[in-house]
Amino acid sequence: MKWLKGIGLGTMDRETLNEYLITYEYLENRIETFDKRIEELASETEYVEKVKKLVCFLGVKTHTALSCMVETGDFRRFAKGNIYSAYLGLTPGEDSSSDQTNRLSITKAGNSHLRRLLVESAKGICKGQIGHKSKDLKARQNGNQPEVIAYADKANERLRRKYYKMIRHGKKKNVAVTAVARELACFIWGMMTDNIGAA
Image 1: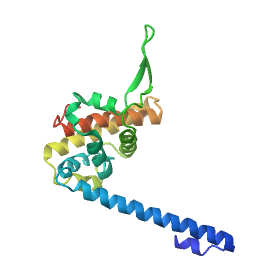
Image 2: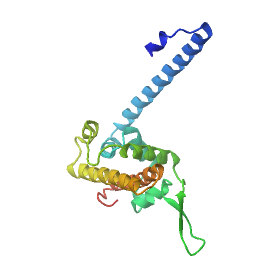
Image 3: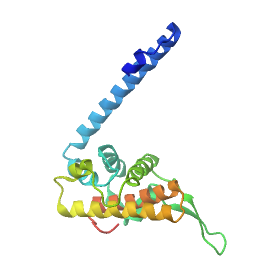
Image 4: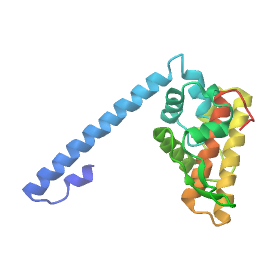
């Protein structure tokens, strides 16, 4: 922001810019405060182990992991991962009024906050090389049981592969990202219900 101070502005422009900068700094500080509070909550006994498992997935960090747990509650109330993804509104609707079944866009029923978070997570998954693990991901996975890491790695590789395959076959980017988010929800369900490999 220092570079802005060197710009030649009139008095009114300078005052307006200063107001914007004050607002920007205030909001930046608020976000920092919320991030710290989220980290504190995630380190509580009730959540710490589950958060530690969920952040093994690409695109899933503390905020998304904690939100999934708090807003879902008991993952075992969903018999399968695809039922959980339907709860989030990530499954496509159907028009089956005739002999043919036509797939529609996602239903967007259910928890819109979690749906948005998982779509954002999917966007993170859909970047980078298949099988590549960043230093950040390795650090997040560190300390987890080998089977948890193996399950997350399998999911990460499968989801990236799925995205690139869909793009190669001419699917629109947002359709492919949503499909990845849907399957990510299934993997999250598997991790949280100890059905590792059941997604």
